[in-house]
Image (cartoon, rainbow, N blue to C red; front, side, top):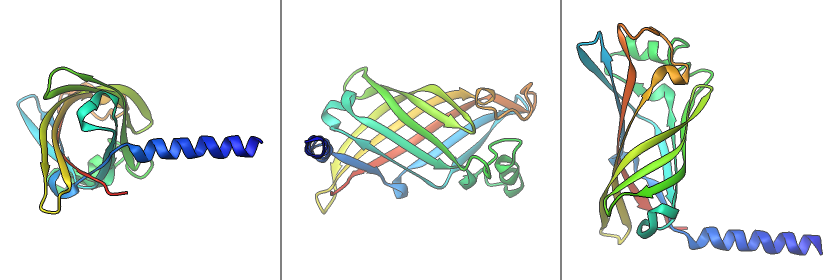
Amino acid sequence: MKKGILLLMTLFATIGLMAQSHYKVDPAHTSVNFKVKHSGITFVNGRFEKFDGGIIGSLDKMEDARVFFNVEVASINTSVPMRDDHLRSADFFDAENYPAMTFESSRIEKVDDQHYKLQGKLQIRDVTKDATFDVKYGGLVRGENGAETAGFIAKSSINRLDYNVAYDPDGAGIGKEVIITLYLEFKKATL
């Protein structure tokens, strides 16, 4: 009897997941960017080259969707190899011990037809904290093969010290605030 109930519960959960739409990030049309103040006078820009993510749910009812994203820390690129190596080190991201940054949504609030507040848990190094992204929905298009592609821009800022990225803790040379901008395209997955 218990096996039958467990099998029935698993079947309903599977059917529920299959009924939802799945969108996978398109890495060829997505970029994960950041900028941080340098010496208090200008900004250093960078990006991460390797990442994945997705949306589970309906784009017509984004408030009920789930969003997740993973970034490979070692893929950092500021166009200066010596600086990138330093950013991978224990002084900053400690990529050897913490190879990924992750985000998983906990709530999506609709502001209007194009704007959302995406709230969730952001993990960097050994710290997980609440984070909010301002998201602009760019729309939905269908490719030549009929596949749906949705576009978004997501922006947030964090204090790097909150995530134990504590090199130059006074922020004299490297600003404490990190501005994050993601240009995202998600393609509807075929199951």
